Image 1 (cartoon, rainbow, N blue to C red):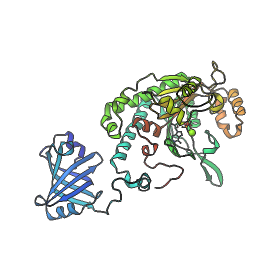
Image 2: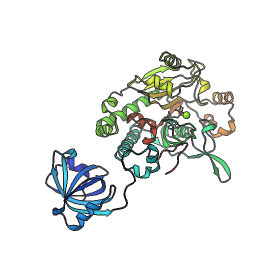
Image 3: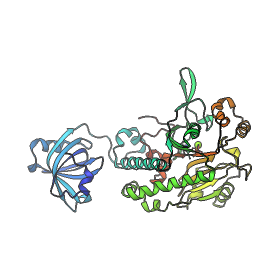
Image 4: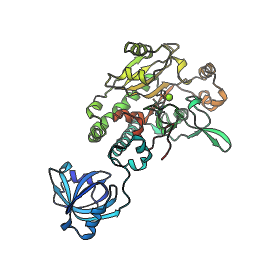
Length: 430
Ligand code: ATP
Ligand code: MG
């Protein structure tokens, strides 16, 4: 039976013989001893191999292993204060499964080189921790929606029209006709509210982002819930409850992982509802008071969002944007004409936008009027407009960028390490 490395630290195996399988994280020999660190998916353990305690084949394996050679060992668990984590393995058997070649990654390599060898760099502790955390975060998001009676739906990835504007569309050849990789699944999510009530889509969205930023990818994972009979107030409550739920679960169950990624769990323990709600017009004034420069009617960029969130410890909503700078499907606020029933959720400490959401225009005539105002061709969106002809209902939804959420929750400087193979303007390999 193979023991997981993490069990050595939790299962009181002192003095017992265990078998382990994994990879060489580090190795160094001195005289008749080899000191190695074995890595498996669950963690790292120090292994000592003494020449006179193992057979010849084991010894030659131990002395010829490279970093990242694969191996299986047998040995006795020993409590040892000097070893990281307080335990080490004294090997009785050491078998190289594949010696391989010298590993090309050592210390202090440039970020560009690490992206070139991303397929190997994925084995690093840093990315391993982040990928584990991402997995848990996504699971808790799904759990949150499942607990609340949402259904997950599968949208098409290949579509005929965009909903975030032509300039960031990726065009493809669809049997001789132009088609596009989806920028958002929102419109398809709206289809399902009529049969399933509350739904979400978790799928990639594609945007040909031409500028290099620390928070834009050309391909990202987009969580898009859509709810029948929800107004914008209820929509925002779903969002803050969702974020608070995921933070709470991560703190309760994965504090060590958070710490390993560079996030103090106490920061996330403070993420409780309600989140502050700030009107767009007030937020613009705040930006100017804080030393930024923007006019009413403009959208917030990364710099403005950084100013607004720099001193915050919880996410904030900015709501009621001018309708001219927002997507055509957002419903005008009857109590504040000229603005829409929308909100962006900005993560604290400079991270900025992680969610965009709104109440949707649900009446046929209103939708047609807005589309004309924005010079959109009705034919391009005919099926979407049709939804308003047959038993339409008030509804709302939002879009969360998974990588933006992970970046903030793990306190990372750049979005690139939140996804295994980041796609950006100058890279789609490996
Ligand atoms: P931004 O102003 O930051 O470009 P956006 O207004 O284009 O964002 P939306 O179209 O509202 O964003 O998309 C919903 C969410 O998807 C955003 O709040 C963000 O979390 C995420 N998102 C948008 N574009 C990207 C991208 N290029 N890379 C990663 N995540 C993105
Ligand atoms: Mg954008």
